[in-house]
Length: 310
Image (cartoon, rainbow, N blue to C red; front, top):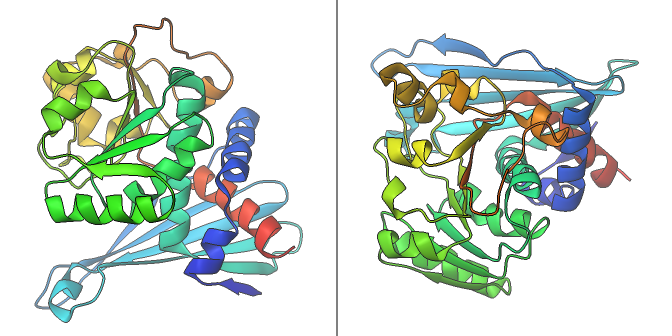
């Protein structure tokens, strides 16, 4: 069995290949079981959680194992640890063990890029990042695989984090800079991508302009939101899978309050990739909400096995 550390996992996941593989799996209509959640009691601290995400095709399968241990904050350790086991479908033989955090960050950015391939304006070149974490750092390279992105502006609740990511991107050859004012930065962007842990909306619908594409990554629990009701109401809404409306407060809360309805969600990645759910005009605001699923992990796993073991 091949073991790929974080650097080797990243090297084995070039964005054009991951995006193409992901599109092929969604076009194929491949499905995966819902995420498995298991609570692991921890005496004298917050309970830990074990997450299992399996998926398989005719040739290859994978299982992502993630442990979330909130109590690690007092130990000075990361709260999240994860690995992805890849196996051969014919024999069941274990082929590779991949770094889970790296694979998740790159497949998450690739999923948003896949949506952008079908939904964003063809000439979209100006990207605004809301958030400056590990996933945000992947977004420019992923998006440049499908659109001519040439400038990146970054806003974060912690200005020093925005500056640090801007410096990192500049060192990689990007035209990047932090911005202090989110309200003024939003209408200047062609693509607005949010990858934060916000529990209250950061992106206001009144700031959006016609023709933009909004990409929402961060709100992955019912208690989290990155965009307000008006942003949703002004947009043509798409999701990665229908599970997004159940798992993400971004959609679950406004659906419960009546701010939007199920009819406002125009399609998922299966329909987007088939051309059944599309942008309908140059002036339309499109909005894509992703929470992730195991098909994305499988696309990355197949790519990594092909690239990292060739």
